Image (tube, rainbow, N blue to C red; front, side, top):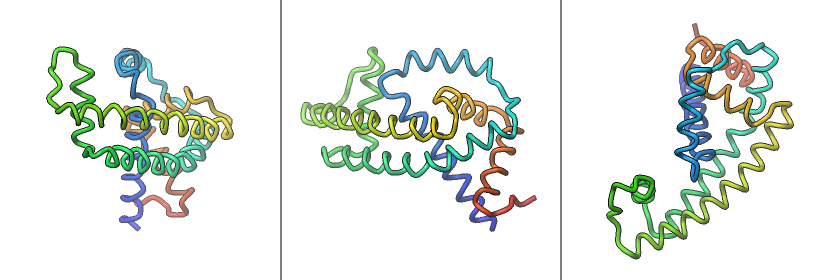
Length: 173
């Protein structure tokens, strides 16, 4: 039972991390500013009903995120790059003070992969936003709860407990 809870928590952290990745490519600097402001203003007083809606959405979103992540990884690897190479080139391109250390071939592969990754992200963002809205939330509300989850231990525990209950595996105390 502990192993299942541990795997579920790992999946949630993966979903949260991927959620941040999926929503962030191409808007890193703007989002960084917004997240700094939101971290100071994060709301944690969500009702059980709001958190139930979030958990229901999350449990539907996680498989979509897994699927999109697999497609993005496959596309990057199809272009002949490793995930590390792709991430390194992206990080270097985002910082204009750092010279990109890649061959012309790697840069071309990166550009092709990036275009496909963005297309995959747009497709899955639409699907994910649809699922979130079907659960009577806005994507912004969903993101705010994810941020609160990351920052507030008490809220994290409440959400983890709700997830465990939905998975029919009561939390271990």
